[in-house]
Image 1 (cartoon, helix red, strand yellow):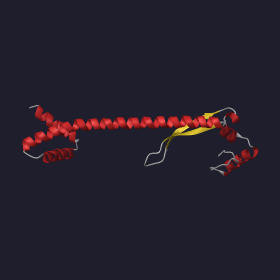
Image 2: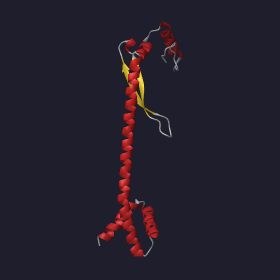
Image 3: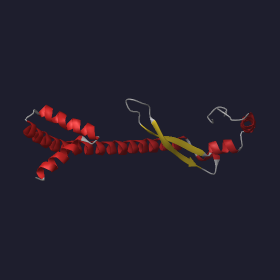
Image 4: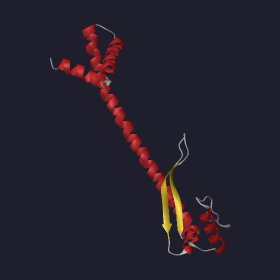
Amino acid sequence: MVNDERPRTAAASDSTFAGADERQYDADRGPCLESARACLSMAIELPASDSNDAVHMGSLNICSYSAPAFDPSDESVMWLFTTAASAAISNAHQRQRSREHIGNLETALASRAVIEQAKRILMAVHACTADQAFELLVQQSQHNDVRLRDVARHLHGSVAGR
């Protein structure tokens, strides 16, 4: 971890590597420090929803061949960019969810008309109430493991074909 104070190794898989890092920190140079100083990285996250924390979607990394390539203004500009990117990704996800929701509602509306017609057919044939006709459709749907709207379409099609 590189910050304004002395760098430190947060975790190492082997003490040999931690020792190599310490030698770099003491010398204030080495591949780990050069890499950390010559790279500016920002997370791209989706904003938190009511039920969970922000979701890390990725990172924007800008690297340079020279260690002192970035100044605080670069970090500010990059923060603005990643904030805008996060908002754009979030908006795209919301738009997709809205499209899917609208599609489901349209399907439900179309299915409702067919189901209502099938209920009326059953009410006429069996002299039953709307609730009883609906229960007949539900039983058929569950018995054959077929969607209710498909049972209704089949019934409607069989009567319309006569």
